[in-house]
Image (cartoon, rainbow, N blue to C red; front, top):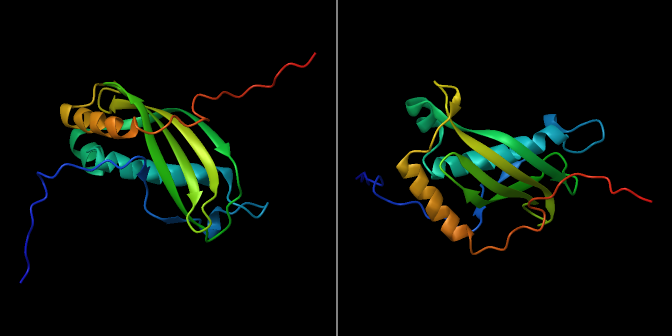
Length: 172
């Protein structure tokens, strides 16, 4: 006997931080130095962010039906350790802040077997009305989920690398 369970009234649970599903470094992503090419760190982080967007109700269905989406406006990526073909990784996502039109979050990429942090990514994303081609406030259900996620994530310490900038100190 097959039972159909209606999950439409269930609220998402926001773990702090969000932890992505396991992803693998693909052989085609390896550069001539023998490790993961810098562009594919973004792919891994983006896949983890897509899992969060689906959790808050802003996934593929939302984009297709409402023609709204979150667009990345700015990032700061730090490469900390090399990853090789076949390595299993997980990314964490910590929501640092949000308002009606913006998300500010911090991601960390970890080797899933050895536990070391391979990279971090700080992101500012904008909620965009794709038809109008400009930012727009997120609808109430998404805003509510973001507030719930922020409440869960506010218990975490702010990552030491959040808000860093690139600079060369001047030497006398």
